[in-house]
Length: 65
Image (cartoon, rainbow, N blue to C red):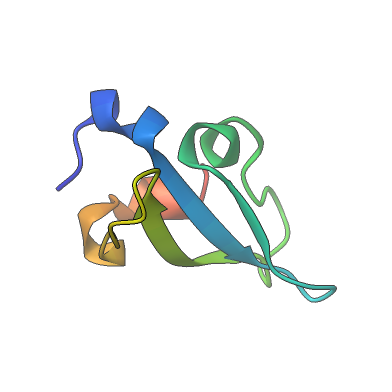
């Protein structure tokens, strides 16, 4: 499980009906999907390129709430 102090090092790919976008996990947590149920994290990686399993991101943070 990622520790909150690691969040700044993680980039997430967010699926959106108009196209996917890669953003820092900290930005996703700040903005999140709000009431948009079709917007979600599909992939994650560290800034070094190392993949991060979605199971490493707490579910509440994947929802951005």
